Image (tube, rainbow, N blue to C red; front, side, top):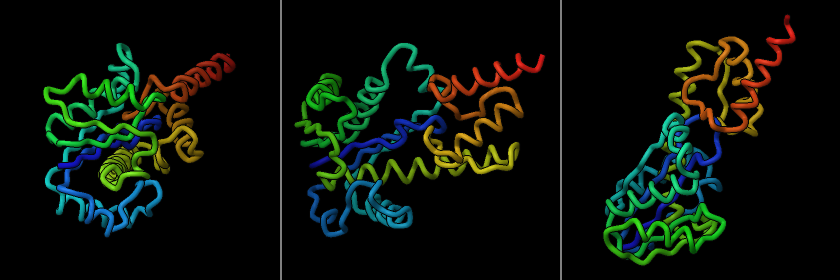
Amino acid sequence: MICGVDEAGRGPVVGPLVIAGVTFENDLELIENNVRDSKKITPKRREILSKRIKESAVNYEIILISASDIDHMRKVMTLNEIEVNAFSKIIEKLKPDICYVDAADVNNERFGKNILSRLSFKPEIISKHKADDIYPIVGAASILAKTRRDEEVQMISQELKKKLDMSLGSGYPADPVTQKFLRKWVKTFGKLPPHTRHSWKTAQNLLKESKIKKLDEF
């Protein structure tokens, strides 16, 4: 039994971090469907493949870590440690013989060893950078993670739009639409919107800017 594990939403300032794992007997069907890194597939194609993967996989698991949980956990651990913890929980549930993971750590071997140390059993862990582009099984996990995060961001966007009628964008700090939305929200309500990662520099800088501007008004 082979397994792939990947995440979506490591860098965004808004929304959850999503980790997905999937198991198959082999990757022949994934190769036939040209399953690869979710970032290289159109959203519509991702949705189609996500449904196929869920239907044909032996098993799959998805973990969501909310923005507030990320902030809370980052007080005592790094983002890499948060991912190691989540990856190991997924693998523990899926119980594969071999597991391919997309390494978050700059040292891919260390990332794999850290995951293995948390498991009650000892599968073979293959930890690589850009594993979602190398192994179809990790590509499948990346598709499940990305489609789920997109769904979550869409729900967050609809929720926030009831208070501020603007597009949220992708939730990534570099997205001009997200930047504009956050600035307007902070200016209007004097605080960050729900589902924002307060521990991110982007969020902290926006609050600082807002306080400086208020002082200038005196």
